[in-house]
Length: 323
Ligand SMILES: [Ca+2]
Ligand SMILES: [Ca+2]
Image (tube, rainbow, N blue to C red; front, side):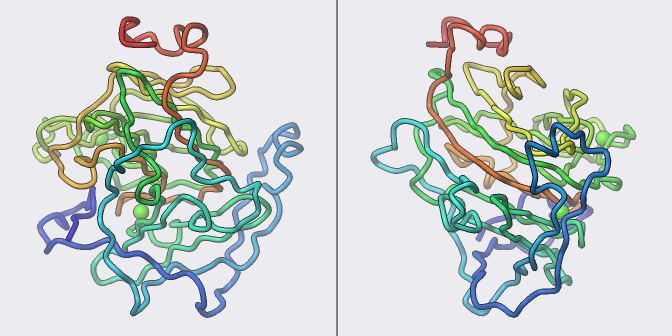
């Protein structure tokens, strides 16, 4: 049994819950769930991303079935793969992420029925939790695909995503007036469980703070809004690169730095933040929601061109720890 992370508003006190693997095939046809377009999308982005304004095909409902099974946390493999591991490439046109290297896990809040949907269309998977904020749904690497993420040597998570809709209005946990959750989050933890969780709002990317405990009291810092940077995540598909190296992370897009800062240790919370080599992309909170278009995810050991641009991207990195 695993606790679901960042259950909010007293739900942490509830009985431990399980994440379930969802059988996605053979379900009843769902009502169409069009992806919300973005009228402000620039012409250049639209041209490069022709799917952005197309209506989605009917979404596959994410619904627990009698066959749903408990899933163990990812475990390291005896022989970690070497070289980049492509976990999902929508351009291969295989369908949803579970047709490749990602596993969907989802959960509805107590007393609710999951309303989240996912649909594959035109090279991207649209994951939507916007219909019910308390839903949680996201993707993890299938067991055995990601292991040996040594932050001393560095590793790189690449993901291409378009946040078309995001809501976090009721997520201020420490009373400072700033939301502490995001409808789309990315977690990358090294083998020693140090890493970073980044939240993606439509207009900002920001990091989750660590600390010994969550609020309350408001002085507690675990899972509260830390450093952030303005960034338009909703303009179209953005190819992000997240580098973890030494004691720091750095997020960039097309060679342009977005956000960097120190690694965190969230392991005091327990699963899944105490899982080595952990990667997650999706909605992991009951107090925010999003609709995202996911096109690509890969993990690679090492830092590309570490001797060049990385020196600019990773000002926090101890040069001695970077190959
Ligand atoms: Ca706050
Ligand atoms: Ca949610």
